[in-house]
Image (cartoon, rainbow, N blue to C red):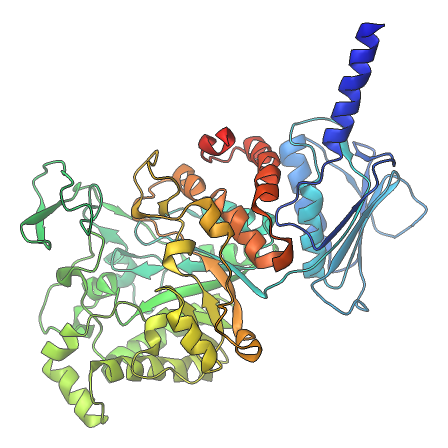
Length: 554
């Protein structure tokens, strides 16, 4: 009798555990029917999808096949009386096109959505209701969820210049974003350390600019880490602080994406309702470009090199000359880029442009004089405005880092605020769209713990700080706050050399970011988020995703 009682208690515990709803990001509304029988997905379950929702069902079908070895049958016609069905229905009459409703009972799972995009978000919630261990029969609790996003821009960035990641992993990265209902992928394709996109008109960009002869060892010296000891290697670069020495490993690193590969990734993302925003850096962070086409720099006859060290040391921080030759070159580059990316937005960088190079350049000074520019900040604004005018002529809008405010903001530009929130606040007050990505909270290459398990940037962005970030600054009026388009996490790859390290730095901070951007502000609750995260970690185990086990200790 005692054993029967214990078995009954165990079964009850399993049932209650299965009935927990641990979705990230937290939905707007959840109604759980504890008394109802669950829906069971097995080999007899079938799909139906309205026209336009095929991408959603294909995504779910592939997920079930990959992680549970289940392959389900499709029906072409809707029959609401048919049992053991997963139905995805598009209802254009829903007032919010981004809203979906997910209803589950013993007989059917029905997603009713205002658009095919919203249907895809409903599928992501359904996936997070699946068991976190493999089984031939998957019990899904009886629940009704109504849901829609808080912000229109929910972004995540990946730097492939410092370290290159192949197409297969970029697709995997996009799947991570899809699972968390993110809708923009900011692809940082060019920088001082490597040019990663094929431009047919200028083949030397990838023949020369895609490759460097070594990479820095250890942290880039800065405040608090001047005394770090570096492995002694033959190649040395003198830097600041005085008498500091950087060591590089002397190992050639590089790679690039062909235009066909770019199209493949863009198509892959589109089927997951993610817009890819390409970034082509200018006028600074252009050493890879200058190594290939030195005539576009500010120093005549100089032999530039693809940078091997991080940071903004003068040796590795030259800028493009603001000449007609340079502008024509960049217009040709961006024409090919815009042909590849259907995104209405093109990121043109604009950050960390040291003015010293323009000050030292006679040609730059003549350009300033000819255009009535008072200083080098106005020259930067002139540069950005010239490029914006061209991008706008192609029906697209530029995004730039907050330094594009220097010397006067381009008329239609979107500002990505990374140096705190000041630039974003200023841009919002000027009625420009703003994407908040303040470094101290939103840079996921920073350490997650005071004592990290592996090398990271020498700053600290713990999970709780990410989760508690509010993208809309309190000082903005209600009208000004409307210009906060959303926010973004950034993953710079100076110290990230492989996919497992990307995953480690990304998770679970991506979970926190997704909840900031999707869920109602009033529903944010860090202890509850931590509880739901434990189920998410089990799902990551199922998917083979690397994350810090230290979170399980809490």
